[in-house]
Length: 467
Image (cartoon, rainbow, N blue to C red; front, side, top):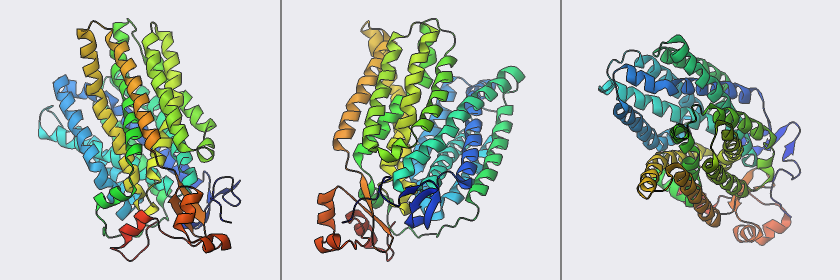
């Protein structure tokens, strides 16, 4: 009798690591490569959060909020459109090449900003676009590199633990940026620091990927065909909802606080980041033991509750409550949703799958700001409290999208080991097993790896097996 290979199945997990036949056997849980990748991600996040003072640079050049909006908006839109190209590039050339290359482009864009003297010339738009594309490539490639070295059941765990470097980078980077701009008084120095940190991150990324190889694959299959075969709308809905819910507080919280006479909002983020790090650590084993669809839906509802708690904020100390809830929700939500969408793609297309989920997150961020602004304007015209109305509506939208995504979400892919030690996967439970494989093969216990229907359609045009 063949049973799914899960965390509790014999031979799947052991104190030493994870059994992953596609990657050559047992993989260490958190080995040298993981921690080198962790260091690279931490330095990258410190660099990107040091550059949150980018608005000060634009204002120093004589720019206004109008210039800043267009510069950042074009960069964000460009990175969103470029994610699909980056995803295919990762699958074709390997995560190592795109990861290190993107870090070098990031450093180059930082140093190039030192020669910009106008807020309206083409140079600032070009290098901001390069900057945004580089960030998209860095995080997509690093996430893909880590995910490809783990069994699917533990992908969410490793994504979550790698993501803790981002929370630590937020704490260190924002403080460093404030000290450079406010304490030192040299706005342009943020680009020197960002460029040097990116070069340091490239060194760690090179060390993490040293000795790994990637077979360059010709692009026989069009991107749209891969997306049609493996992407599922329900996970894209959840990814967009996640971007909407997590992207609004950094933008609108300071403005809301000013209407309440609250001068500082740092307490919210001071609670948010440490709680998220601790939650990721405490729940790291939960991702492999619990249905990710349940974790994603639960944490999304918790995120909606976090938005509703803003309605009752009247003093600075009360920001602790939404900060705590957001930290817990973010810690569980992001790796669950990204893993749900990315693991539907075979390993050879994992870069595209990861980039697709990050693109869905970006869509939520991009659409969230104008939606929130519309609600604020409409509430003011109707005589309703603007910000409480906004957070109430956002929470309701998150709950509705969660219901839609959870109701239409397909069953997770089940992974089976055949008699030859190779892994194969398909969707569903016993019924899917009996309809996918001949009864005599199942009863004999000699299940051989076979492609899923989606994989079979894609391999008609190429001689090699996907995955």
